[in-house]
Amino acid sequence: MISTPNNPISRARIRGWGIALPDDVITNADLQARLDTTDEWIVERTGIRERRKASASESTASLATEAATKAIKSAGLSPADIDLLIVATATPEQLIPHTGAHVGESLGLACGSFDLNAACAGFVYASVVGSALLNTGMSNVLVVGAETLSRIVDQHDRGTAVLFGDGAGAAVWSLGDPDYGLLSFDLGCDGSAADILQIPAGGSRLPTSAETVANNDHVVKMQGQEVFKRAVRAIGESAIATLANANTTIDAVDWFVPHQANIRIIETAANRIGIPMERVIVNIDKYGNTSTASIPLALFEAVESGQIKHGDSLLVAGFGAGMTWASALIRWGN
Ligand code: ACO
Image 1 (cartoon, rainbow, N blue to C red):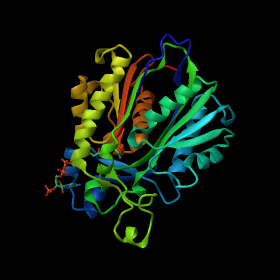
Image 2: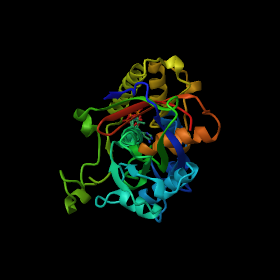
Image 3: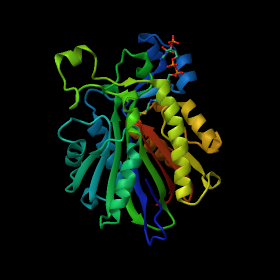
Image 4: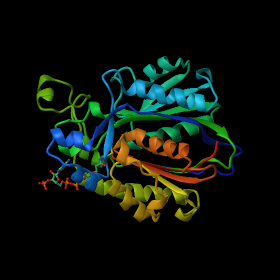
């Protein structure tokens, strides 16, 4: 659930980062042309104006590899320096093998790797796990959040097709100055809500068959309003728990970096946490909901634009299918 390393001599911090986005932009006008929807409805109900879509030659592993290559370079490292790769994704390259096998091969890594599925909370989950492993003797852990949600969304379902996009973000976590990095976190999951956001078939419970294909059981099924209600509650409670774990309050936070699922979820959660929208990082208008890629995309774009500065305190928070949630307090510095 919780952790606040007490007076550490070194602390896990993000040493390098990178993002990857497909070139293909799908606008609300594109969707309006083929679905029973409008730009006005999408903007008003979600805040989304555009999203990216992977081309036929792109995949979760290719986006992850591109983001990870940039992260290793920006950390001033080479692939041989990476001790572990964790790929957070809900849209794996294949069921077997794991996505990390493909990413590691493309990067030329010699280290171990595994995938982690905590849906949209995945990047924060993987960052917490990776940071903890740094205290076991590893020097550099590469964490990637990558998704190709366009491959698992029913493009004829206006309730979900307008929401999701593709992309990836990667971070190299290393130990460093104890004044910077991961200060506290909170992880959780309420499995009683597993059915409100799911892909019914293709796994052990309901293997692929002619019937599951005919029933369209291989795409995302979502109870939008129920997800909305629970998301707002989970983000708010988790963020407050993370602040309490660090013995601090929202007043000490410079930026709230939430999972980009819906602008109304972001606004309601920010209001509950008590942080004004001027201190909230938002890029949902450009990319939609990219699940586990959304927090790194928002975080690293804000760092690269100069919005987030050295020494800023960041509260990141995500929620997703499961229902999972994860939040963390990070003092930015590398
Ligand atoms: N265009 C036009 N009308 C639409 C569209 C659309 N794209 N989608 C739904 N509608 C209609 C519905 O059919 C409904 O019509 P009706 O009143 O005639 O039945 C009406 O709009 C209202 O539908 P609601 O579902 O009540 O709309 P709501 O305001 O709840 O917005 C939304 C829907 C955007 C999906 C919202 O519920 C939401 O964002 N929920 C959270 C979703 C989310 O965050 N999912 C990701 C979770 S993270 C992860 O793990 C992937």
